[in-house]
Length: 111
Image (tube, rainbow, N blue to C red; front, side, top):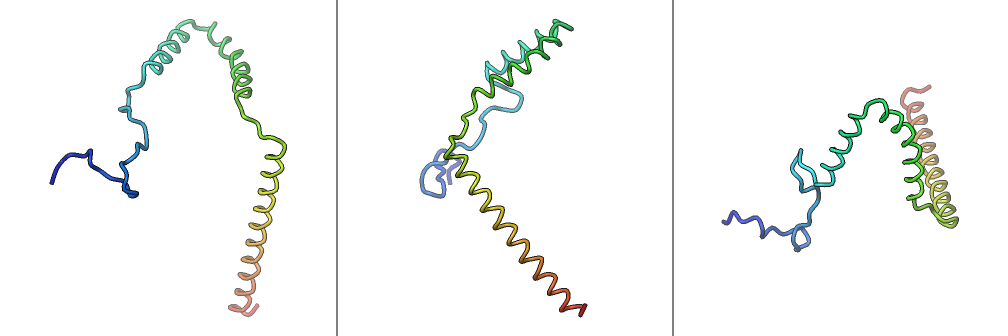
């Protein structure tokens, strides 16, 4: 028996793949630490930073919306059809279960 963990094998026979963060809790990358430092510096400015944050929010929302990959017309039609078919199927299943439950209760209690 060896305590060496490097020889572990996954269920497919290959080596295990990483599945999460490798950082220890409380430790971040240099970029994370820089962001925290700049946030602290911005908070020191006081009231000026409050106004800047309020005005910066719509700008940041706009920049995030520009990053979104919007679906094409064909994709929208496909997604809409899939959604409607799923909705109809679930509604039909709920209706069948409701009718069967009602019939079962009427049979059991003789209403």
